[in-house]
Image (tube, rainbow, N blue to C red):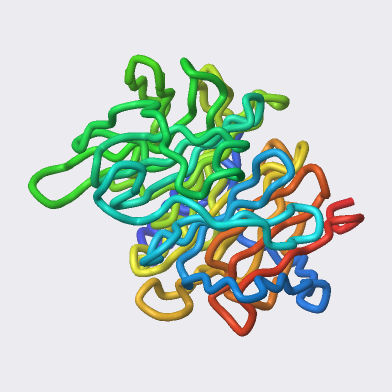
Length: 337
């Protein structure tokens, strides 16, 4: 009996190790404890007399920081100088009429043409705003860039050109549910080509994604799983990166990754690990990985992060916080070196 009991333990141990041992594509990171407190290096951004709601989103185009205030009853975007954060103007009125936006979604940026695209999920259209036009006229009447579907549509995307965007696509899964998938999206034709690789153990996906054309890499981070997937731009799996919560029974109750961005050959992702039904939902730290998903360090920001973006021009991270300060930035300098 003792021999049988011992054999059972050894078998269980072998199975457990086989599930957690890193392979060429599967990497398990149970300890991410190289933590650096950078809270005192966060510089607050003053928005003067511009009142902006708590649910704000950040975008960069040309020399401007766009702060999207989708819950505003008046103007839906505010433009600031991306170098000194001086306020410039507000634009795009909320409403049902011509030139107004009913239900504002994502803002896509065409850096080359210095224009941006605003999704209106009420009118089921993506509107085109040349930067010069909105700077000169806050009530500028936009053209229609694309009609969108109310069944399968991009909730956000990285614009490369009119025929290639890397998008998070929303798909219905019955009468009330939905799923999120990474895909190549042709804005011109509306064609959606889902990524060939999808993790076989994940059915319900809630994801953020980032793309680096320089590194020919796409990163998919999961909100509802302690998982980051790295693919090449031909949709082939390079690595699955698992955190310590991957096999937890209560993992579905936790918020894991938030937003993800690239800084050169580094991957920067916000991370929570807290209960999604409490204020712990908001991440307060950033995980730093190399291009292969190997963990480097953790930046403890010290504030609850609602959104952030990377400003390559100034080598800064810009934040919207759900905390004592609303907006701030972090000079990267030698932080990741």
